[in-house]
Amino acid sequence: VVAALGALCLVAVAGLILLCVPTKDVVDPPAFKYGIVLDAGSSHTAMFVYKWPSDKENETGIVSQHNECHVKGGGISSYAANPPAAGQSLVSCLDQALEDVPKARHGITPLYLGATAGMRLLNISNSQASDSVLKAVTSTLKKYPFDFRGARILRGEDEGLFGWVTANYLLENFVKYGWIGRWIRPKKSTVGAMDLGGASTQITFETTGAIKSTSNQVTLKLYGHHYQVYTHSYLCYGMNEILNRLTSKVLKANAYTLRLDNPCWPQGFKRSFSMESIYKSPCTHNEKPLNYFPMAMVNMSGSGDYAKCLAHAEGLFQFTNCSFSSCSFDGVFQPPVEGNFIAFSAFFYTVDFLRSVMKRQVATPNDLTEGAEVICTTPWSELLKRGPKLEPFLQNYCSMATYVSLLLIQGYSFSNTTFPSISFQKKAGDTTIGWALGYMLNLTNMIPAEEATFRKGTSFGPWVVLILLFVAILLGSLFSIFCLLKSSKGHGAV
Image (cartoon, rainbow, N blue to C red; front, side, top):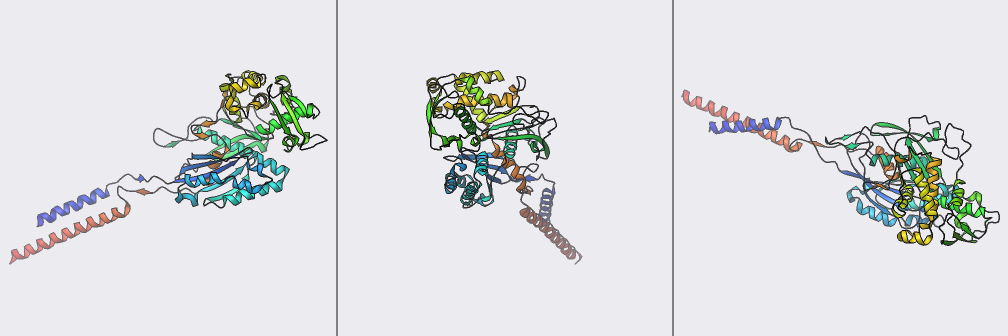
């Protein structure tokens, strides 16, 4: 019996030793958090669902795109005459979000709507209508079980800044997962970002030069590091507004006659439209004819004259009257461009058309200029053969290529040396490049991170129970042995 009790003591001691040997802490995988951003652009609305692990890295969530949804119809600013329809247009995508985000996470998933240049213009021309549209979309968003954080109109500089954040995040310029199994900050420079939307265009980049205009200087903290960047947004220089402004230039040059040729349209293309469709925007308001009849119909035919189109496009810019040491255009300060750039949205679509449809190389400023001329002088019938799936947009590529070449070369001053540093991209990996992801990245700084839980080889509760059990076995066995030995000594004395 004593031998058996002695063996039991040894087992208890061994168990205690094993339980008390230092063990490595194991991190329980953190639960994912989700965030939803609605990008209410001038031409359409897109919804992006993002997710990131709850244990954030250096105060910024490790965010990835989980899913996306594109709302049918125009942007919310197009519902100025019927605001409730703006909210209703978002329903199908919001219903999808209910499926994209786990039900248990609905109540803690932040939901944001950011409206860009289309709503900025509506706010200028009709602030009451703008407020009504925002109230309507807010009413719809509040009906969903997500944590709605507001619908607001973004400043142009915010749009540019968050686009810059998105591009650099996706290119792993802020943080990357190293081969040692940890998140590390790579030692490489950020890239500049250029966005061309429907109603505005933005340029944002880090610069070593002085930023002499305080309105163009932004300091941002990401992953524990501070970045100082130059950014500017040009309202009325987006794709849709440029097309309207060019058409207005053509009308004005022809004394607003209702039947005329457009040198920026391909030869053989014809279209009729109302005067109101061109002059309802604040971007063209100043060129409205004196005898203005909104419903007057214009019959316009393409002539494909690149030289005349270029002259009209140059009239969109003001390259003089700079009160700073260096300007881009319209008297806006801009330091010299430096480093690599990524150009997305309509920049990408324009250059991609030159490369994939027109089979043109775009590696130098001259390539871009010559490509624009080739598009403008290509007849409508030939363009239809080359890009039949792009028929609704084919008539616009002459205007857009001409405008983009002027914007990049004369506006932003990209030269033969710096132009090759531009990468024209739509996506990085599987994620769309735009301001929405950068917006989400910035907002995660305001969302408390859940601390990762730690455990021993066994969970803490069972570990304590086993310790107490082995101690009880050890003490019980020792007590029993003591009693048995004492009893045997008593019998020996008798």
